[in-house]
Amino acid sequence: MDRMSAVKYAELGAFLRSRRERIRPADVGLPAGPRRRVPGLRREEVAQLAGASVDYYNELERGAGSQPSEQMIAALARALRLSGDERDYLYRLADRPVPVQGGPASHVHPGMLDLLGRMPSTPAQVITDLHVTLVQNPLAVALLGDQSGFRGPRASLIHRWFTEPDARRLYPEDDHEGKSRSFVADLRAAVARRDSDDAEAGALIRTLLRVSPEFAALWADHDVAFRRREDRKRLVHPELGLIEVNCLNLFSEDGRQRLLWFTPAVGTDSAGLLELLAVVGTQEVSAATRTEGSSPMRQG
Image (cartoon, rainbow, N blue to C red; front, side):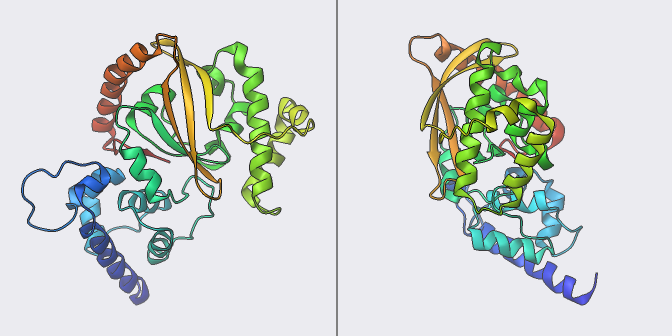
């Protein structure tokens, strides 16, 4: 490690410590617990929220250890509720390129993370306008599956929908045609809001036009429709079967991110199924969390 890198890593550790000390446990959905000797979060709490080992996070605060990955920096930024400028500063301290907004490492607005943390009994997640999942709560993982591990073009559900048959198992076959049209119309609206030379959106469209005749035919229709703030969905859970839900959306000011949460559809038995999901699904997620050492809040 050269002198410049050593200076940066020392500053990175000091910066992480300063951001940790300003956050109260209640700010991130953690119980206050017994009397604390220091302000803010404990190191082990930040490690838990970011899906890192305690030893690794301790090394980061000491200005030592290995260079954090881009995914780890994104997870730390979310765990510490960093602003956009603070997030970019953290990337630069770690000698990592600042990611473009809209990809899997996109910065999630702290307000959206706060709302997500206040929905422990409701499946909820934050996605981008290209349907890249940024963070899920445990119930969303139980309902929709863990969407945090996809990278590259596959991070977009739209890409997986038109290229991977397994991606459609979440919806009844009778709904597939309507979902395809909805995805394409929503994508066209998203592209119009972005810059004309946006690399991420352009690459996604070019790839799908090349590999998916279905997408190409729908894209040629020029249908455009911004996703509604409320949408009724039928979801197929591998254990509980068909669950009908209302999907509600809260959009960021620029429209590039949306907080989705799912409530039982009136007139169905979905309320009971979601209650059962809360018991069965979260037990499975908790078991996976203990095995993998990851955070209960899954982050892309």
